[in-house]
Image 1 (tube, rainbow, N blue to C red):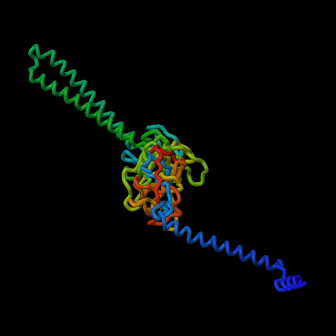
Image 2: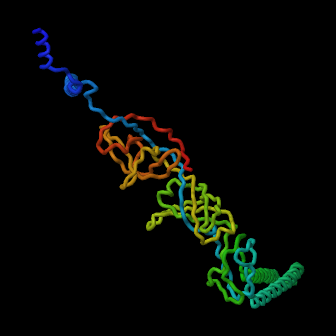
Length: 398
């Protein structure tokens, strides 16, 4: 009886364990475990690192970057230029003789003519009479020569008989020789007159295309009248392309070109036949002369644009990933002797499937970062991984 009373009293004192209390104990246990794990992660790893400072885990972690020494590659460039159209060989035609009044003009601009063809005629009425008089003098001189020769022949037949002295024979020989000389003088004077009359006609110096006409019937012209006709020899045209000093470097005769006149969608094939040997000190430009075949759409004096290919240059060639750009312009990262990144401003040339040609800022013997340049900063130390450069073959820019 007392035992039972004691058991009942004990149960009333302690009471049963309820579910909320059990959950509280579980949460407390979990928190304790988490705190223990965190303490181990902080203090345990720290002690481990401190215990082994010379291991790889304690060493400085440097980013690895791929670098290349680009060298210099021969690159075919495409150069865009503008300029004017002109006759490749322009021939100014004027008065070659003494001149006079133009009586007829026989050609018009745009007309093809042959070498020596008459372009315009000049009045020659006075010159014709002068030539006729000189022609008559030739006949007189020839008659005198005939008479002198006959007298000389008779004297030769009589000198052996003693009727004529040798001195008389010599005088008649001299008379004959003088008459022969007068024939030559008269003939030369007559030929000169004929030549002068022939120069009164304004003729084409060579076959070609008439470009301009500044002569009209009734106009008085002379050797000081200036240019009356302009011709393109053989009808050949050219474009005189203005190019910068840098673009002219490596450009050679024979380079292919495509020329498009302003206002036209038609393109004409040509080739560079002459590169200017001088640079204008004011504009720092030179002229590349692009030869073209004749076409009515090519009008001298007109404006045109051209794309010239075939110019070559030896420059560093990089993939596009190596070239960065910001507000200051284009740049690359190169590594110094201590493997620190250094910004290098560059001038970019042509961009093609082969890569980006660098025309300024690089010599080609630097270690250039190929990728990850956007994540580097000047002075940052890196671990370089050298990659072999592409063969220095010609890269064609399309």
